[in-house]
Amino acid sequence: MSKLQNAGRPLAAAACVFLLAACTQYEVFGNERQDIVIDQPAGQSFISMQTPSGKVLAAPSGKTLYTFDKDAAGQSTCYDDCAQFWPPALGDSSSKPAGNMTLVARKDGKMQWAADGKPLYLFVQDKKPGEVKGDGYNNVWHVVRVQ
Image: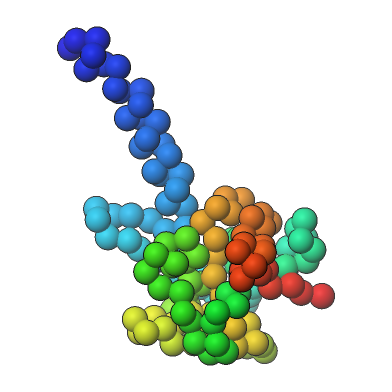
């Protein structure tokens, strides 16, 4: 192999690492995206996490949950490009609403968790439990605060 052919290898490797890191909120199999489903196994529920934005609602994994000002109560408006950066917090057939935590139907037929009727989302730039990088994003994304 020539030096010119070898020169691109480190760049290609770095690009692969970057792309893998960018896909932390969903897994990619081939060209298909698999949404993460926030399930609630028996006895497990959403948690509160102490963060720089105060105490917030989080998925069982510790990832912060957000609401979107453009959503109406009980209805998500974040699809396509929006959902690439703000994946919906999806429930599944075994998810059981409790208290102010409910499920709302998405236009794709999936069920999305909601707090007080507001659909919940994760943010792809939050890599670790308790991060709140999406709080206040474009003045329309907000953490769900708990007492």
